[in-house]
Figure 1 (tube, rainbow, N blue to C red):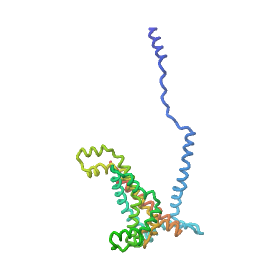
Figure 2 (spheres, rainbow, N blue to C red):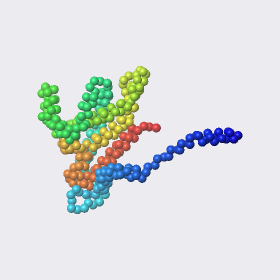
Figure 3 (cartoon, rainbow, N blue to C red):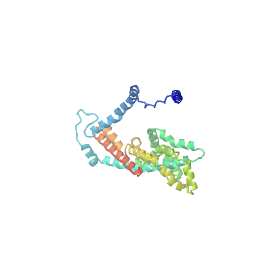
Figure 4 (tube, one colour):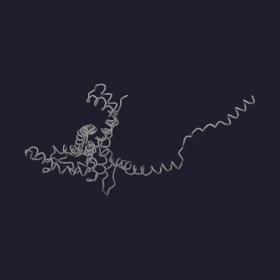
Length: 317
């Protein structure tokens, strides 16, 4: 008995002590202060350039404030909104033009971007060259692109010269940006050309996340390339589709630079847009209160479209 007890005591003494349980690491006050110090500049910039101006614009929308005026602004309630929806024919035309532009550009730019992504995703020689060529307009300033295309669209510009050469002189020339029937279409073509490269890259990133085994399994089942595209590629690209749809819609609804440089809303208001009207009313005509009301209307429209698109494209339980 004594020998057994001694052996047990020796064994317990020789055994290493149990390892302590790891303690959950808690952030020290120094780390918390360092994190707050790093966050302060970003929060300050957000408050100064985003949240602050948005709150000021919200307040101004219900006043008759002017950019330069000796009299202080007065509260006018919903008068600015009533004027926008019932009296301002230019704003009505601008809304129609904006929705028309978005209705054409969103499917055209998104669909063309997908086609280009499918083409440059093939294992073909020179595909990196074509990716670069398609993406170059994206990294070029929109101001520069708009100025370039304004010269191309002139009656004696390169586009009319090329059409005249192709038709053997039968094409007499067209003042694309001076004709109300062609001005918006000309801006649509330029905008699609400038932005399609970005969405090609986004589609391409989505395509490269699809495993090759998926297509190999589809090929073993005897499916055609169209069937694999329809039943495999498109469903797996749904998150990319939602992102592309929302980003193109917001960009299309925000049409401003192209119109401001190429036509300034003309001819006879055929290319006027909501954002152009906001800038013209708020700064050129110094009607800050009315311009703020238009910007609030624009914000609500874009938010409603984004929520609607998200609801229509979300996964159903």
